[in-house]
Length: 240
Image (tube, rainbow, N blue to C red; front, side, top):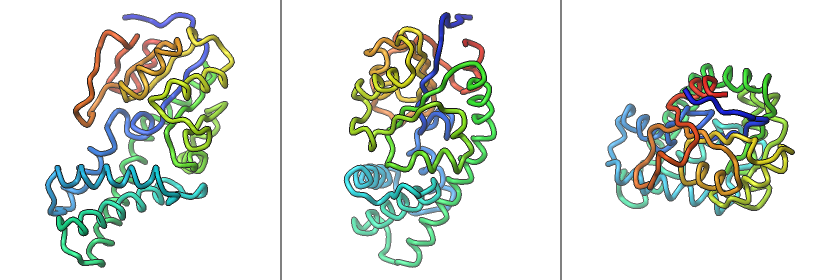
């Protein structure tokens, strides 16, 4: 087993890493659509998902005091409205609201379950290393971390909507390195996205651990680039 040497700090991605333990959020949401028998194809759902993410990036739907259930509620409402407007779902406002609520509730419960496994990993690593979070988020990541009892483990947080730069721009990882205060060659970056985490973190000189899991397809990857590949966050502790 390859043990990573001279690691002095760890930069974590958040979404898809700590909250889902390698599953792309689109797949988690789609699973709940299927569970609640929402009558749309996966292709239509993908359209709605992309629309929702772009809308959240463009418009200030999310407030700083919104927890993750609030974020999920906004996301699912945007998705359902899109699906209805495009004719994929009937224009039944009550049904749309009910379905959006059910999906949001189930996704929030899903994260709570995942965190029972991933939070202890973060806690144990925080006892050994300085941790910094680098995330593309909506200006409310501190509320999310407080809600999920994660705030105490991170010495600093670099949030895209606050610093004005988003992954995959390597500049956001350079900000993480600067916040860490150690040479990038002694910093390990942990994330689930090859193109948004692994590639830009390598570009600023960090070691990288790819949490490789259920992606969303279409991403070109290269297993030779990461220093470590794991499929479960718990496996990371074997290498550091």
